[in-house]
Image (cartoon, rainbow, N blue to C red):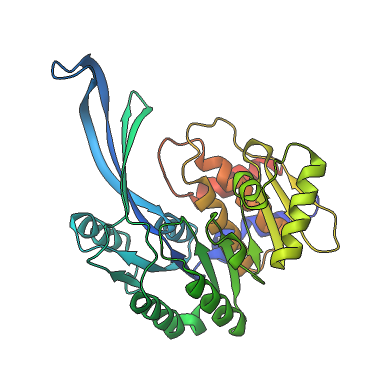
Length: 331
């Protein structure tokens, strides 16, 4: 990037350190069974996984929070978990990660959203989901708003991370945006289909190609299609910045009364795209909170998303790896 200040890269670690960012949305647990398949079951014509390793990691909005921590920031996750065995695993991971879980509300009527992945010979075989997708009730909404109001003054930014699992209701979205903007804080959004057009007047709106196509009822195949879609969303939602992620085609950055800017992808050897969007929104928001321009923040976010795509499974970005990789490109 022509206007990228190399000295800023060298200070990325210190600039992002201790930035306080709330992540509000659908918290998830990702569980894994890794092993090998060498035979077919005698009980049914299905493969038998011989498990070598099993473990759990944060997923969904909680993976965004974990990425913020990996970048040197302090995440404040806000959402809902169940009162079940997966919730116990979730809170154990919180303790091990030294992440404040005061914003996580237990709801006995819901499962902790858990996605279990079975991986054999580094290939994803099947995924098993446990979840409730009904909208949270008004009592839970009030608890979320109350908690955010108690910490808003100390925050540098807020991220709304929507996976259509019921936490980000229209009321929550409206109240959080108003509170955050009134406090003069950065607010960025990673949307999904259900409430796509509720996210108005935010700092950054970051849909991907499919979400944009579904919301607008179009297909984005050409540069003309892309510009139409981006400008349509700017008109309808009025974000300060619109980042449209395009997979292997990188990112398109839109801003009112300015030409679209394209940032090519930085993925070098894609192994697994799971969690890349979480890394992008976390890096983008952290960088903006640290004083980077939208072009610089988008460049860093796109680079970080490409790095995590090289890993199998959902893993957060490593800031040392990010700095090293960017420095090598800018030589």
